[in-house]
Image (cartoon, rainbow, N blue to C red; front, side, top):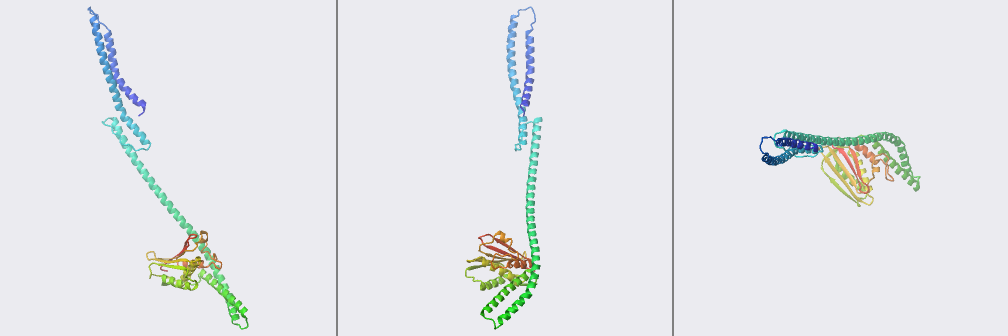
Length: 386
């Protein structure tokens, strides 16, 4: 409550009390000051008038004090609820929560206090509704932002896959044409070299040179075969088989080519006995390449982990081949499945590219996870049914 309003109320109450008293005093002194001549001695009358003045003065002073105290009490009683309403309005405007204002009686001030309490509760309800709407809006915005980020990531991955697929298609067509063109002269070279090898007119030095030619011709034939496989000119032969049996056979075959004494092979097969449908010969090439790469990545020995998971509900088979080698950097991971990219001194750069083509032709995918110094893990995802 503003000070001038509070003091105005008290002043009005005080004036309302004092005006009658002052009027009575003035009248009393006017009446007392006037004398009436009756022909009798006036000394007793003056004494009586003095005593009456004193009595009336005391009475008027007492009544005045009571009136002033009463007016002050009434002013304070009237100002207190108004001040409480004013203070409540100020705190409510600042956003603070205050208790209800309780004013006794049924006058206008109590009605105003009740209306103020109703208004306060409505404001609090509206504020809670606004806060709830804000929280809901923030949650929806965060959810939509997360969904948008996820869609953007999917879009980037799809764009990268599309660009890589287009590049691989072009390279595959080129590789198929080059392979067919190379096969004819290569067959002539091999035939003539074999005829020279069977000739009795060659000495040992010539025989060695012919053997070198035949060996390199075989290497070229292997590269051409990989090119044809990369181009996927061969038709898949789909039949059911157990993936664990295929992996065990590959590990046995690889053991004849690479000594496994310095390596520890861990097999983690889940759902053993379940069949998948695919071209086992093509997948044999994929897993052989991945296992050989994993062993070669551990030059001083290490642990090779081969695990399988078959999920009948999703219809997917996951084959994971991990090594404890030096790992693969992020830059190299982006180029792993690019044709003719290799980090090996004598590599052709077609092994992982061919494997990627075979897996994608089966409706699957290859993923790599690696950190430098912590090994690498290749995960092959395949559908159970073609």
